[in-house]
Amino acid sequence: MSQHTDSYAQIRDNPKFKSLIAKRNSYAFMMTALMMIVYYGYILLIAFNKEWLATKIGEGYVTSIGIPMGLGVIVFTIVLTNIYVRRANTEFDDEAAQVLKEAGQ
Image (cartoon, rainbow, N blue to C red; front, side):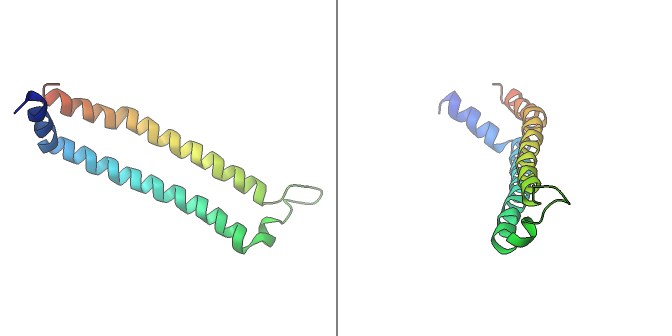
């Protein structure tokens, strides 16, 4: 058996690695669910409640409610991506480095 195979098995069997994978997958699922709720919620509003989205923001305004909501979806996406990247680049990367260190990589 090569050292590469031994290292792979050692990493794969490490409880910290298993914990990292479970935590990362759970976090990614939660973030994905949030994004899908916001995005598909907006799409469903467009499909089923166009009249409400077409309501003007106020007297004398040309903009309807749908425009800031659409911009909100875009901003939400950027914020959510930023949150995920920050956590991935700190907590997840630190834990991965720890697992690799224990495996002698």
